[in-house]
Image (cartoon, rainbow, N blue to C red; front, side, top):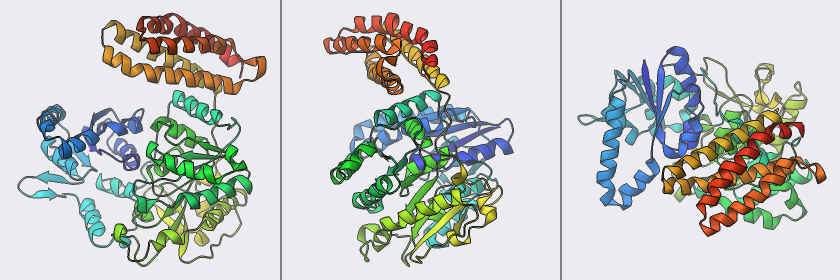
Length: 521
């Protein structure tokens, strides 16, 4: 049985489908699942054992072309036509479309015995043929506040399965973990430390809590809790980190700025190392839930925790439950965004204290004094929709059901295995670069060089971070000068020298140095 799942963009929304994928594999043993997604979200799905094939399109680029470059219409048409033809040949029995608009059109053009989640038909327009999709569309359109089902569970219902049939999952390779560790080490986070992560930004301004509020929380974490803080976010959020740094003095040395410095995979590796993530309704929130890191989530404005709250047991959600929430017109708010202002740094302090109490004192009664800003704990169990339990209603069943807050922060790391995998991955990347050079594929060769040397540099930094004084392994002493020579060759455009370094120097050092690296653990 061939199954197609469609979700093109928004990495949080893609991760929210991973429980459904696990459920599909359980319900249809031996089925082959193809996932159609955008090029930017492929890394979220790679290595997922429940996916047999990932098909991607440059969805973001297509959108830009359609708005700004009409001369590209023919190219887009031809590429989509070829894609549809290729996918039609798979004879899908089931299509689960979780992408409105283009997803419905693509689902209709490909065709299947059964299409769930919405499909576009020229005769009838966009239609829903399954009851769950009809119900979701109607409740979102007419009364979002009546919805008490997370979109993860909605996806399961739409696919014809019970909720809770799988876990949120993001699969990280060992090479991604060592890169994450290298970034943290470069920022001064030791291997035995578990920092608190903070994601300040959000896609829209009305979804942002503000650098000032986060700055107060960071100061409290550093001074009152004596913990290190990791700032996370995308390139366009760097200005937020600058605001934070300007307002910190001695605390600055305990704040690690990784904004714009992580890939999707290394972001997951960093989150694995953290005690908690403090964030609004962001894709990073869903990634933290996917790797098992507890979340303190802030919900206000358009964000509605019953729809998109962190999925799993034991996350804490602060919700400004104003009469007008969830907002339908945030850009023209008549109340001055008072829901966002209602949540204060003191609320976050209180939530973190409760998180610690839940972890250290399992029998302690919990209370929350504020009726305007409410605190909920997420609770999931197989066969049931996720619940948001008011914190004063949390009982022994909730606490004893595998809560995320009961886990030890960070992760157990086999350093020898990680370093061996990292060295092996670098050798493989080097071999691919050499192959492209000899095949005359200059464009691809030049595109892959910066990433290769960036990873090699991180590998050296990682080794340096694990050693001190005269204990640096010979591998560092050999690789570092080679990297300097490679930089000079790059500046001179001397690609023959670069190939020789990769082929005869770096490869030999990496292959022979693995055992030595292990001995220095």
